[in-house]
Length: 80
Image (cartoon, rainbow, N blue to C red; front, side, top):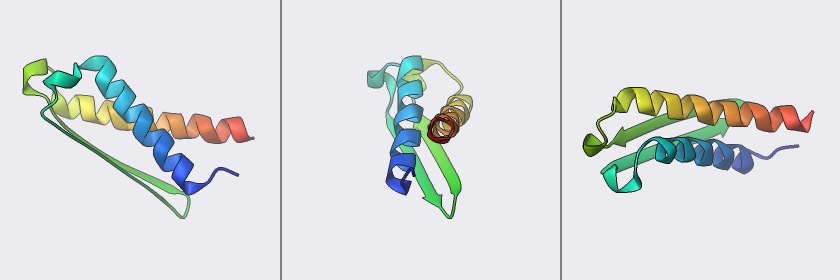
């Protein structure tokens, strides 16, 4: 059984990993990855401010959240 802390950590690490694969860490002025997992419901909110990276920050944040959710799906699939 996967515990809640592992789910949160997996999602956050995947989201951050994706973000930093797309933009240099030095280009990120502010980053917030908020993850909760309560009663079997994963909630992710990703905010990134990277004006020097010349990317769509909202799109980047949305994609990072998607990657985080997929990582959690993979985590549960591996448990089956």
